[in-house]
Amino acid sequence: MNFVIYNGVNTAVSIRKAALSDFDIVKMIAETTISEIYPHYYPKGAVEYFLSHHSEQNIVSDIERNQVFLCLDPEQKVVGTVTVRDNEICRLFVLPECQGRGYGTEMLDYAEKQISDHYPEVTLAASWPAKRLYEKRGYKENGFHIIPAAYNDFLCYDDMVKRV
Image (cartoon, rainbow, N blue to C red):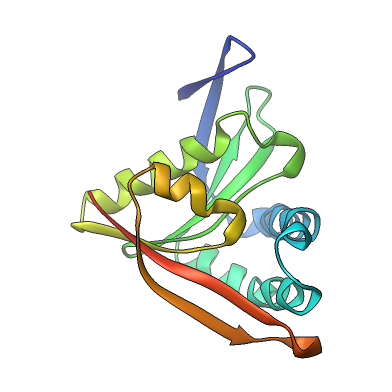
């Protein structure tokens, strides 16, 4: 169990592996975060692309491969999720109402530790809302992508890498 400080108070946070029975909560966290946060950064077509990318099939496949983890707050409510595939951090989301409390940092620490046990570097695809956090954590740009999306929109994101 780890602790984060929120409003000057230490609070216990735990991270556990997701089971198939957790599918609905993982999907809800991804969809809620994308639907509420991403429209401030991306056009409609890009938001829809993100939503389809985090499909039921992709989430179930990752859970079955034991790659999905859940972050629980002190009351044991699931507030976030992260997926670790080999040396890549994917699908790191914190419910919008729980952001700014250290949960994302805890999940990032956890994922980096899992990866550093087997690989010399961590990679991730950084959305615009999260890019600044990753830069502060020592991640460097390693590529830039532009994907055509619906409504003549585009999805832009950076590949980032960090030595661990």
